[in-house]
Image 1 (cartoon, rainbow, N blue to C red):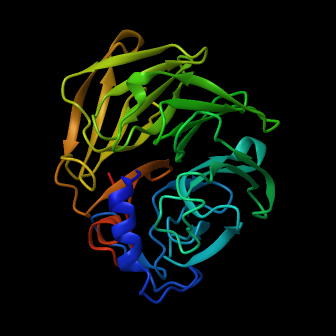
Image 2: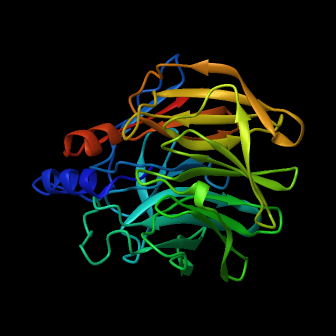
Length: 325
């Protein structure tokens, strides 16, 4: 997700007085019969999550610290990636085939290293070694005019990454060599509050992306063609998307910036994903402000990183929840 400038400045000013610690320690987890992994890490506020098959653990981002941390199934949290070029980290994607972690980063005004000069200007894709966390490349994504918030990532079988920019009207493509181009740019993708957010690659050879403020779902061809998917109900507050092996799509919504609800739902697409309908929905989601989810050997797991506290109240929280859908 992203914020309007007014929301960001309010949250940043209120949160500046909080005592902030690096996200390197955690309490023990508290799993339960409901499939909940609950842990803490100092003011981590993760927005993105990915399953790491190498460690059999989760990787999560941090809008406060700009890091990527490992969250073990025992609830222990440790920092894997810390690169000063990333002020806030958002979407995380594990490319196990190539031994990479891909991280969308930006400055939305709530990071500990946010500055007026970098807010909505510092934005891009970090590419890191999955085993060591060392940087392979940090690719700026600022070619589209206007503000910039690289938000979420999809990857195709060839290793091309596709990155949404929530503050603009386009989607970037970054090839395996780290070369960035604008894949698609369309005025319909722009929104003054929050544009494109979650994105996935569909095995049919196209992308699906959701607009946070409007709840519109877009089918984006790998040649840049943009077509709206007709939905039975809009995904207002749409944040993270997960493509499942059976061809369905899981969408996570929240109401931090919009009239959306804290919910998780499954959608099944019609032929070519020209249309889609909701087949299952959990609302309200038990944890406030779920942001996204990831597919794991244990099923779909949904992240809630206390973003309602940071964005809504302007203070920090240590609580992190990962719950099975």
